[in-house]
Image 1 (cartoon, rainbow, N blue to C red):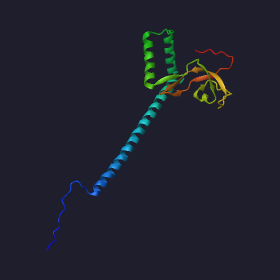
Image 2 (image 1 turned 90 degrees about the vertical axis):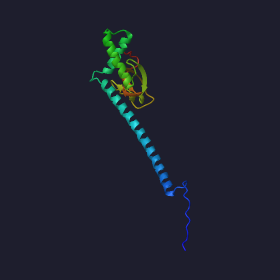
Image 3 (image 1 turned 180 degrees about the vertical axis):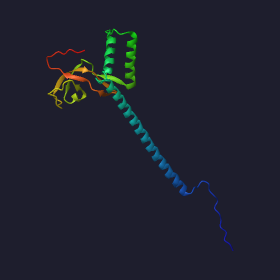
Image 4 (image 1 turned 45 degrees about the horizontal axis):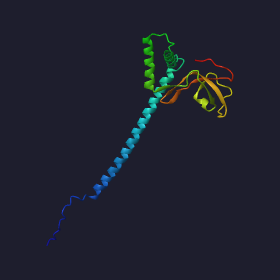
Length: 180
């Protein structure tokens, strides 16, 4: 006699354990891949911003070199002359020059840093933010030592960071400087 084996009815709700384990592993791998993809994208955005800033800063530095005629400061000075009514150029020329300056300011997120003729006090540590026409002999990395300077050529900021340091010179006490 044969033994009859009774078949269990198939329960569609139950899955074999190995399928659930595989699905959980796959879900874990997908979460890790998603996290790594987000880190990669964030790194790409940071790299893009850094490269963008470097390109902008390089353009501004080239526009401010005396070899290239200090074009940016010349445009800025011309704008100041137009604003004060001391310019004798034609309206067409002035419009072109002002539109070039406005385009540079907007595209490069550009702002002047320290105005020509501005006088202020600095100490040894803050002196690193400036270029000196003639380096003061008494300059040291000392917070306590203050001296007065005047701006000879303005500096420039791109995206709020100093890219071109203003050129300053030390003003000796009791000496009136003529700038502007």
